[in-house]
Image (tube, rainbow, N blue to C red):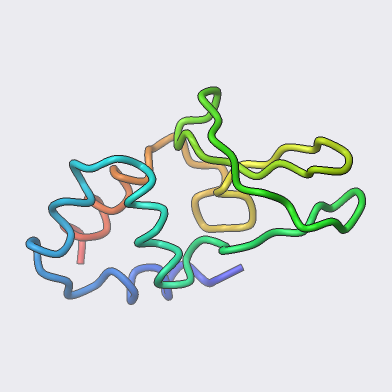
Length: 102
């Protein structure tokens, strides 16, 4: 897990032109942006069977993207293991908050 200070450093100092489309775009774009900065995991292994999990579309999650094990069908949020794990804010709201706070 990345320390909270690192999350702020990653987004700190970016121009609104870079962040603006993410704040108003779809969650897939925000997830890609956060993965490119190593804030969210690019791949995950199942904690039950150690099989690599597959990314899947999930309408029951706020971010509409999650992980699913092809072997044992375990599901996880794309946020698991990150700073955003227990947050009720959307990832877009987090990007906006971090941008304006920095």
